[in-house]
Image (tube, rainbow, N blue to C red; front, side):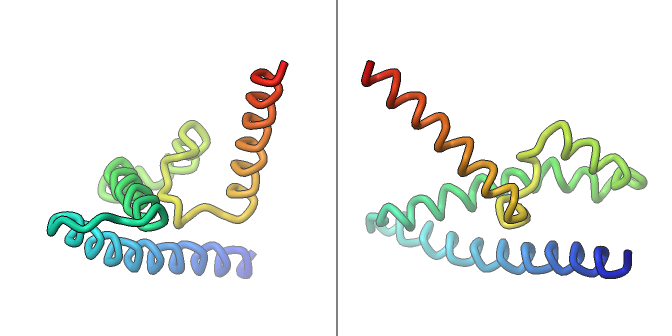
Length: 114
C-alpha cells in the first residue's frame, strides 16, 4: 500500500514539474508569435496542448480549493476522463487513446476505400 501511494505521489509530482516546464516553453512560443514569427508544426502542437492543459486546470482547481471536494475527484475523473492535464496521464491511458485513434483511422480509411 505504501509503495502504491509513493508511486502515485511521484507520478503527480513529475506531471506537475512537466506541466510547469511546458508552460514556460509555451509562454516563450507565445512571445515569438506575438512578435510575428511562425511556429513549426511541433511547436504549434505543443502550444495548443499546453493551452488545453491550462484550461483543464480551472475545473480541477475547484476540487482542490473547495474543502472536502477532493474525495469527489475520483468520481469526477471517472465521469470526465479528460479532466486531468495531459502531463498527468499514465502510460496505459496514453496507449488506450492511441489504439482508439488508430481504430477510428482504420475505419475511416475502409469507409473511404469502399
